[in-house]
Length: 226
Ligand code: OAD
Image 1 (cartoon, protein in one colour):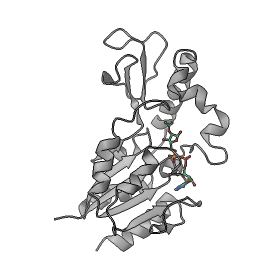
Image 2: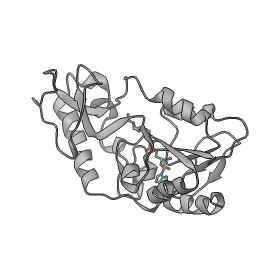
Image 3: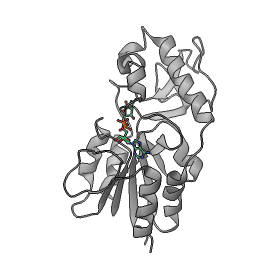
Image 4: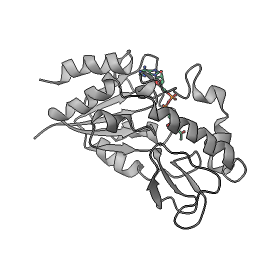
């Protein structure tokens, strides 16, 4: 039976594809007020700005490509059972060939009803405009988990981490919960690797690879693949 690798990825995973992270210098939260564009409390008062913010993210996504690191994760499926748990709302893991991806914070290429988040539609790279309606007649909104909202996929993600034989964390500052707490579901004694060019606060048992996602994953693949 193949060993199971769970990959926890964050914004740094997509940085080499040209998508900005949130908290680095020059990151998105330096140019936008997170409370205004990514908090559920703003939806009633700031709807147009929120739609514009995510329309821009979606448009950018259409113009970028997965990089070598995304491809390495997909290639690991030849030797391992691989589950990717990502905080990213882009589709670069899927486009690189990963077949089992859990999106904790939603997906840019989907929209949902603002009254019922389970009423989801694929929108590809198209914009959402004020007045666009979901099937139930309410305003269509980005299928994103905003701050102040529940994270419905967290239980499935925690279960997958608890089943992992190897855990790889890549490109996340580990500052946003509940995602950052997933590491604690890993079984005692399994190898845990963290790939990040900057210092991230993780338990001492974690083996830190202080490199970018592409270089770090290439190194780790050499080590893991027989
Ligand atoms: P952050 O922006 O908080 O952290 C990005 C991490 O990626 C940092 O630790 C960087 O050092 C690292 N990094 C930068 N370039 C890298 C590279 N080339 N290779 C590898 N790592 C690199 O992003 P997240 O931790 O993903 O949520 O943020 C978590 C959540 O906060 C996001 O999903 C988003 C945000 O607010 C919502 O909007 C709901």
